Amino acid sequence: MKFFVDTAEIDAIAELNDFGMVDGVTTNPSLIKKSGRDIIEVTKEICELVSGPVSAEVTATDADTMIAEGRKLAEIADNIAVKVPLTWDGLQACKTLTDEGKMVNVTLCFSVNQAILAAKAGATFISPFIGRLDDINLDGMDLIEDIRTAYDNYGYETQILAASIRTANHIAECARIGADVITAPPAVIKGMVNHPLTDKGLAAFLADIAAADIKIL
Image (cartoon, rainbow, N blue to C red):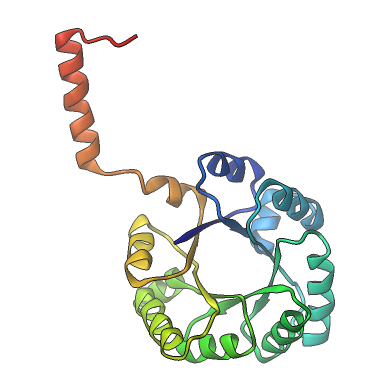
């Protein structure tokens, strides 16, 4: 499973990248705003930092302008994945940009029907939103599982990019189900290392080391 980091903060991306934990990056207008940087400038810097796909989102809602914005974003670097919303216009933009050889990430997916449409439009990635479904008392993991089944049934090559991930458990479930990619905030990815039994075991080891006055260096 590939790890994309969901942020536009350069330092956070660099830290995880140094550990080999970054296969790509996803951004959106909200994350760009939070970074306080110009969208073109910060996206270019991210693309230079990581070798994998970097999702940069269009701001328009009509197909023609989305296509024009997607072409401009794709000029930033070869590893740009143009991010478009899962609307009819977004699917039209996806088809056009895909036919031009550009990577496209279709975002804001909340149903299997939407995921099938995105696959048929040639999307490189489909981004189902787990956390936002959980917020309305639906199980977001059910959607990941249903899309996986549908894509496998028909051999769709679109990669399932699980998004709106809130917890390390979300990531573990995505791995179990077979999502191709997860994108999560840096804190959630780093939080995967935590387990109370690891902490308890380490505390016991440290106590024994201290009691025995063990030194290696």
